[in-house]
Amino acid sequence: MIAPLLICFVVLAVFGVPIAIGMGLAVIVTMWLLTPFPVLGMVQRMTTGVDSFVLIAIPFFMLTGRLMNAGGITDRLLRFARSLVGPIRGGLAHANVIANMILAGMSGSAVADAGGLGVVVIKAMHEQGYRKDLAGAITVAASTIGPIIPPSIPMVIYGAMAEVSVGKLFLGGFIPGILMGIGLMILIWGFSRRENMPRDHAYRLREVGEALWEACLALLTPIILIGGILSGIFTPTEASAVAAVYAFLLSFCIYRTIHLRDIPSIVVDTFATTAVVTFIISATSGFSYLLIIGRIGNLLVESVLSLTRNPYLVLLIINVALLILGCLMEAGVLLILLTPILVPLAKILGIDLVHFGLIMVLNLMIGVATPPVGMCLFVVSEANNIRLERLMREVIPWVLPLIVVLFLITYFPALVLTVPNWLMPTR
Amino acid sequence: MVRALMRLSDWADWIVRIILVPIGALFICVVFLGVLARYVFQAPMVSSVELSRLGFVWSVFLGAAVTLKNERHTQFAFLLDAVGERARRAMRVVIDLLSALFCGFLIVKGAQMVQAVEATYFPALGWSQLWLYLPLPFCAVFMFIHTVAVLARDVLSLASGRGARTAA
Image 1 (cartoon, rainbow over the protein chains, first blue to last red):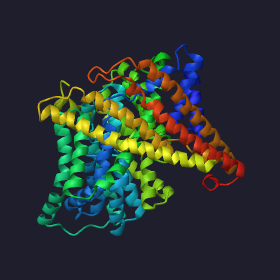
Image 2 (cartoon, rainbow over the protein chains, first blue to last red; image 1 turned 60 degrees about the horizontal axis):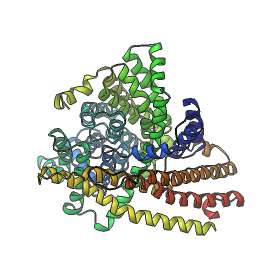
Image 3 (cartoon, chains in turn red, brown; image 1 turned 90 degrees about the vertical axis):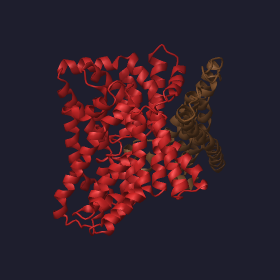
Image 4 (cartoon, rainbow over the protein chains, first blue to last red; image 1 turned 30 degrees about the vertical axis):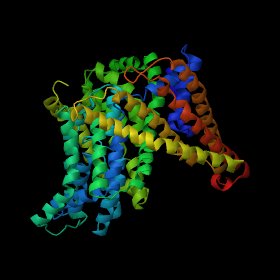
């Protein structure tokens, strides 16, 4: 049953049928021809698959990112980051990474960060004398920090599908996200002389204070989000709604950069973008159901255990496979397809599911920055008029620190688990 | 004929957007008010979780209809890019046909599902569960209109040998 299901889906997907529709058709045909279950079950699963309080966080985090960009908050964050590291060689490149790390605490989407902050920072870097390809490559790599430092849309998806605490996943992303930033900044430092990267004038303390004052309200967003979740005031889903309302109040009432007439298009855009992911989740619900009936999880576990019982070796195999698949397929689709298949394997091998979730999400985020199918590459190339093939070549060294961090968190689980076990020991 | 279908599709998209804006905005407010009610006013809204789940399901499928209209659903295009112009047009017609078939299935089976759950109720809201299952067939109607309009455009393009937009 599973082989025809997979073959049918792959044929339809390769043919160019939209993933959600291809998946739905494959499930319907398999259910109809090869199982005794009524196809009405597919419709039921499509609805119940998205009837989840956890998934509600996705549009809210998207909305927060959109409002932050539309409200000019990203400019304020960049000015603040620039005032901190601008005077050192390659200061604006460092500021790019720092601004992405701060924005990561608000938006949770690599593509949104690359499309919003990316446009502002690449323009500034190019005007200061950086090669546009280089500025684009650094931006693509830095934007992948977005879904690692909390909040994170992929972690919400993984948490909902694997039934893992989203709060713990969020906290697990802190150290890996900071390590990614440090890794990229070390590489910038290494490249700065060879590329003759410029530096800003020395900022006076007063200028730093002004930049901090301009950005301080935006900088409160991650504190509200994480503080609210940790103190138990709200769940991650409610935190996402609070962040969206806060971003709206900042942009609409305080900075006055968006107007009432902009709201309908922002709402429609947010839900249309959300639907790209959630419609696939909806269609995949039937797929997951057939995987359970077909005992695909058990079959995979048995085949892997016949090869090795060493969890570290299994993680190495999974990492290599995900890195390759991440280059070829869209990260969100891979996450939705592979979570129900790989999580049973991780459970049997005794791998902590928060640790495993971080490995999967970081791995797939590397995928959004690697050619040939990397969403951030496409967004940065299109939004900044950089030739895609040049950007693809330029990005390769910038992905290396991310891969190093991936292997560090794979083999040192404490890098992921220390913060959640410390701050949420009983939840 | 194609122009009329495209106009119908534009009109359907306008309706979906008109419905999506208040539902989306209301849904955001419900989740936020749920937090306010519990922690600020110390009066939890018991039904806010069910109401927000309901709003989310509606938003997901209405959003899916907007995305289908904009032809933005994720797909692999490497085979489409690799083949010649005529083969690509033929492939597009097949993709449109399969999409229309899928939407038709969602309308028919979705309507049956709505009937099947009509007599079951949300525990806190007390509303019929049909409101949870209705968005799928309801939005599938709009998706069906979009796919049929695109199918007609692509069939004309294949027959006339001109680009899809020019043909329409």
